[in-house]
Image (cartoon, rainbow, N blue to C red; front, side, top):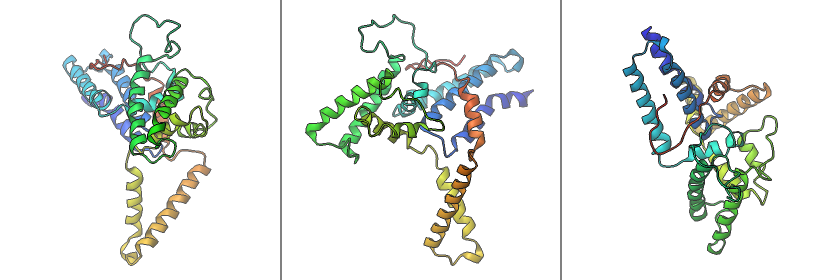
Amino acid sequence: MQLNQLLSVSLPYAKTIVCLESAQCTLADVFLYWCGIASDLKTVLSQRASGIPDSVKSEVRAIFNTRWSEMFEDGPTDVHLAAVYLDPVYLKSDLFKEPVSDPPAKSDPGARIKHLRIFKRVGKYLVVLLGAEVEHGDHPLLHVPEEEKRAVKKRFFSQLMAYAQDDHPFSAPHKQGQTVLEWWEAHRESPHADILAALAIKIYSVMTNSMPDERTASIFTRLNSPVRNRMSMQAMVSQAQIQQFYHTQKVLDSHCSEYPEYYAYRRAFCSHAPQFLLSQRRDSTS
């Protein structure tokens, strides 16, 4: 029974670690899998048949809430939340729970925005990101002269508002097999979406783990065997590139993921992801 109790509260974390090592993982997945962990823990801790003492349940909840706050409430940025919000699949979903309050007036510009608090929080982060790109980046669309900065910021707010309200051109549906990054890349040339698309592409291009580097180092280790240790560095790099190219091509040709567990766990977690009231206080998962 004690072994089953240990597995029931630790297995969600173990599955998440496996999933977040995927080459297809994004910053949004980091947030979503944490929601999946919370959902699984809530289910386990609400079952009396588990036999877990109340004191242990409280400790488990406290550990999760502390780590959640460190990652998503007290962290340096809201990049994970922004990544989820910039996925049109979750834009109007019930992933986020709204506080009980009076509905906004119809004349309010934010009346058509479903998650207004989340919109403001994400918008605040994206403004900081846009400012950094304008001042220090090298993107030709964002790194503009001083006299054009105000116009860029105005276009950004207009595009973010249009995206939050699911207006054109952001109302375009996902194509079959299209990733979120590809969806945003399809909007990069549109004058009504280019600023926001540039920021979204940057966020969704971030690699969330070091697994590709570790796999490359493993290839070098296999190539640099005792009988082949006179191989030049350039030859080793070229062979590693060829091996990775054909390995990737084989995966694409088979129409399946390199990590089937990633998609299986993602479906299992995200389909039961609970609602969260994102606030500055530490909410209990109970």
